[in-house]
Image (tube, rainbow, N blue to C red; front, side, top):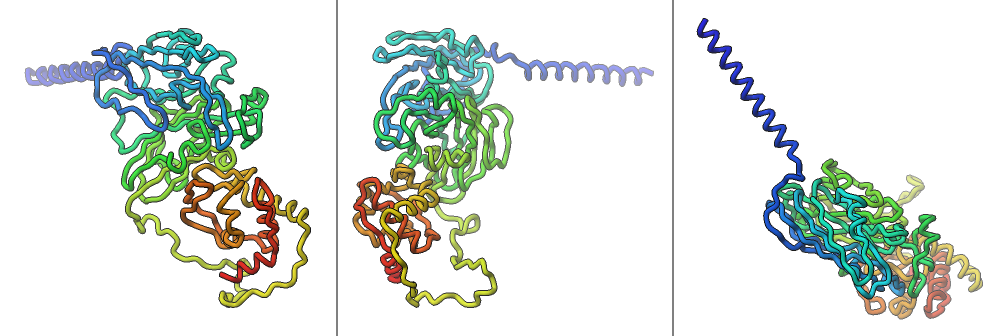
Length: 484
């Protein structure tokens, strides 16, 4: 009997202890982040894109002083096109802010005295009226200070919320604030800051000069430019982000909008992890992630082969026609097990078995006499070929894409050697070239055009955009083809 009582007592004690532990565990799990203890004060490190401040790590929560200046300034949208940007910290997107859950952020917003307009800031990481907008409305030459507790870990957008709100955002007034969890994010090798935005100008895409904002286009959501980090080519050529084979890359990706959703994709890579909408939910093995206007995502992937990987909004005309294109340049040893490169190149005949032998490449092609078109007809037909074949890379006015695809307009390289240019269209070209003093190292693929189409499109290019007005004949195209 005593033995039975002892067993019952032990069971009762065990249950009580278990309940106490469960209660304690639940209380720890639901700890209010508003009650996290603050120890010490530090000034926030702020960085311009594509760079980010040092990770928070395992530091304790602190009073974090953030000082940000609003600057209205003229900048370059693309070659020959200027735009007056309104900025947080002098860059588009604005300065990256890095904090941790539990920090008490004391935010001072200063409006430069040379600015023309009042502004404020709405931070999606803030729990409070207007995300801080009500407390931060500031006129030129003045500053405002407010504070907030960082309650929720995640990657958040901030933007101006002064009326008309859309106009302020469309002029570049947006950025990202990262609130890291206690203990910090897992360590990676490289971190970068990328933010997409859509811009609306009075002139059409590529129209030269200082372009003002167009409210009518903005309301219709008819963007002239959709870009990463404020301008065409901000992440291409010498401005490309970099990594080494074997490294893990983390991208903090935001979308300032004001209108368009981003379909963010890195050509040739798969995201190992995506923090969906910048929050706790993690998707794995993701090809393209959707980032709403006013939203963000954290993407991570390991780079395992060298090369240039293209960052795009996969609403693909935005990438190749409006500027939403960047580059990640990866250096290191090749790994043929993972990616072989070209193993074989041959001729594809859709006719199948009706062709039994390969053509004799040493035999000169015999071409029937072709009656040359008039110059006027060539220009019409050539433009049609250009818009279908060349437009995406070289753009409507032959301006190319900075640091990616060379210009055809007033091109010293093009005008110096017509036969060389014809050969590039016929055979393609890989490797570095210098055009108008700038170096390009991209790929021009072999074009599947007839001799007549080559003559037409080359004539159109040479008779457009300040080039030397050469009339390229079908005969000259055939001569170049047979000389190879």
